Image 1 (spheres, rainbow, N blue to C red):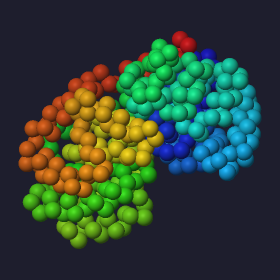
Image 2 (cartoon, rainbow, N blue to C red; image 1 turned 135 degrees about the horizontal axis):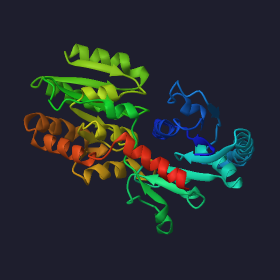
Image 3 (cartoon, rainbow, N blue to C red; image 1 turned 60 degrees about the vertical axis):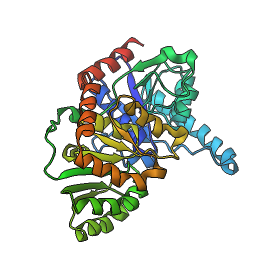
Length: 354
């Protein structure tokens, strides 16, 4: 790579975590700069020192649209100056409206632009900049809303996970206390904090289980108290940038269907029940879950049916583990060639050639 790189990201963990993994893949050869908005800062690793804040406003409020358009224009100028000052030659975007000013400036400067679409639905920002991009990295060619005329720009890679995850060895043996990891994603999930508790208590009366529960910071004390009063062994935590250690402990995960979380569960060979967020943009979480369901490597429960179905489902898993073990085996097959070196070589090959 002969020119400096900039990765643009921001917003939720769903955008920032893939950006950090791209950073890991590229930083061995070059100094990498990351741009993010203020929201994305909390998901950024502390060892990433070269970053710039670009707080792109949303464009979904018609009342403030004129003001926000002026802000984006000014941020595009700021981005232009940043790209020139840092001698950036190539841009990598993980999608989202946060990337607009940087990509606008990069397009004006005729820089090479690469996109990442971790979801199974093409995001709006990625769709808008697809024509200007050199390539777009995806996990499948069956990306919903993807224009046929740009299909040759797709580069298929294995779902991105941090390098240290590949080094973690997970025991095939099921824990003596069947351990259930509950994950609401980087922003938590109220449905898991409330509706699930009654089912867990009922199940614990007949089955030795352990709960590892990710929740919002404000709910940690009440959940800790709840599990303690009901004599259920538990660990409660808020969003953790390295929650893979909890995945390593778990036999089963109940989760939303963010692309990064599902990728980590898959590589760690942890069967999961996906409860897609129904309000996710373009229903992308359902499509993410379907990617694994088509390989018979997960279960999906609709949020509307979650409360009535989850207890029966968990009891079935605990009493008859044949389907559970089958999902575990299918995850192993799905990730047979998913290694850090394979992903790294493919990314670098495409970027060096284009």
